[in-house]
Amino acid sequence: MPEGPQMYYLKEQLDMLVGQTLKSAGGDAPDIPFDKLSGAMLTEIRTFGKELLFCFESFTLRVHLMLFGKYAVNDTLPRKLRLGLEFEEDDVNFYASSCKYIGGRPDNHYHWPSDLMNPAFDAAEAVNRLVKKPGALICDALLNQDILAGAGNKIKNEILHIRRVHPRSRVGEIPPSRLRELVDEAVRLSFRYLEWQRAGEENDWKIYKRKECSRDGTTVTKEEIGGRSCYFCERCQELFGEG
DNA sequence: CGTACTGTTCGGGA
DNA sequence: GTCCCGAACAGTAC
Image 1: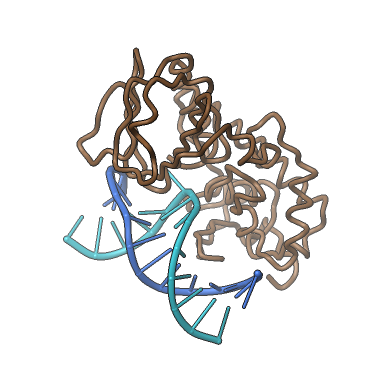
Image 2 (image 1 turned 90 degrees about the horizontal axis):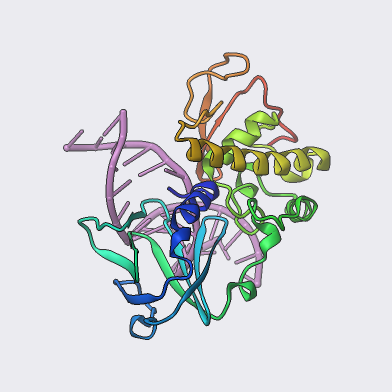
């Protein structure tokens, strides 16, 4: 369940842990001093893009579900435990995910204005980061977590379709105003995605994994560009430059 | 039952 | 140093 909005939703489901003290921690995640964590109080849960951050007074535990990560709240799954956190009242277990120990508070490790769902997100700054990669394919740049933390392959394909930009376009060939539209759309779609989850609704994708373009009915082209699957409409998405 | 996939990191070679 | 590629990780749906 990897894109930013899903992690944000998971944070909401776990917020009842804040204020609780860690009774024990375990798992096979490397480089985590499990024996030194007990007794710490969870002060806050944050997200940065696709990362979930358990913030304690003097350290932070970072969880990234990658492609196949699984978790269970007040429950276990029949597979190898990567990171298990047992609090006074509740517990949470992570499997097949990337879990790391970060000394200190997360503020020293993360640039919050890069995170699409953070109140501090700065769209103009994000456009500037894009502009600095003129030779990159737009479909790659949108997946770069240093540029837009939290954007995944679904959000990428959807915003390119909504804002009518062909995935093979080079960033440097796209007018900055159009880049700004893509960035703003990434934020908008992230929060819409969050609302779908809160409401328990299915995602209403307009191009991703569809057979026909939801706008004009053109057969959707599926092609691997820049190493990831792109779904797009040859008719309504504009190619900037030679691609 | 083979294939694809919401993701990232690492190492090697040009 | 940079860019690009493939491998590795690993669970489930179709």
